[in-house]
Structures are given as structure tokens and as C-alpha cells.
Amino acid sequence: MEWLRLVHDFQIVGFPIPLFPTPVALATLILFLWSIAPAVKGVVRVGFLVWLRITWAAFLIPAVIGVILALGGLKVPSATDAGSGVSKYGYPVDPSRDAEHWMYAAFTLLTLYVIEVLVKGRMIEHRVGLKYLPLATLFLYGCAYMIGRVAVFPGSTPGT
Image (cartoon, rainbow, N blue to C red; front, side):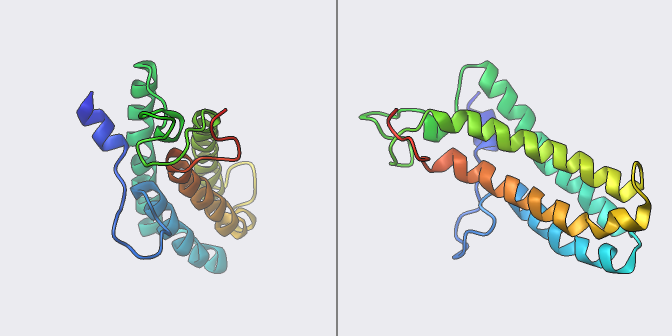
């Protein structure tokens, strides 16, 4: 169980600007930057598709582990009291953050699916769909970033 928690809680530490606190946020940031080329050119190359699959893996591995941990009764650190009303990161405990963590994970999963639809040209004409690719990947990055942020920092209702 401790190994699962270690894999799930992995953070990228040491970068001065916290643009990508987790591997999922880093993968989605790269995907966002990469999505500009297919939107402009109107063509998706193999490299983008490979990175999209890497992004899926970077999301699904901690997501599945998170479900296993949740079934074991665990919640995100910002919602768990580590003693005297603070989380393991030293911030006030906010139980509402657990539901928020799940919400952002669901948005990430849904957005990855929408990106697949845009790239494959289903439900919308291919070239038109590719124009929306940077917007979808930017939203994806925001959701992935918030997954990590919500797990660490309290929200607007700490202590309740």
C-alpha cells in the first residue's frame, strides 16, 4: 500500500516556477505546446499521437492507483488531518478538496477523450476539430495542474 501511495503522490520538486508539479501536468503542458502545430498545419503527425498516448498513461497510472487508494479509505492529503488540524504539508485541513480532486480527474479523463475525438476527426470535420485542439489541451493542462494543487493546498473552506 505504501508503494502505491508513493507512486500516486509523486511530485516534481526543484523547478523554481511550479508550472508542472506532477508528471501529468508536465505531459499535458508539453501536449498543449505541441498542439499548436497541428492546429496551424491541419495535420496530426505520429509524434503528437505518441505523446498523446504517453499523456494517457501518465494520467491513467496514478488515476487507477488513486481509485485503489480511495477504495482503501484514503483521501487527498489536503483533506486528511495529519494531527492538530493540519495536513501533511502543514496547511489547514479542507475535507471538500477530496471531491474537488475527483472532479478535476474526471474533467481530465473527459478532455483526453475529447482530444481523441478531435484528432481522429469523429463527430466534427477533421480540420475544423484541429483548430480547437490548443483550447482543449490548454483546458487539459489546467485540469491536470489543479489535480496536484487541490491535493496539496486547502481551498476556501479549511477546517470545516
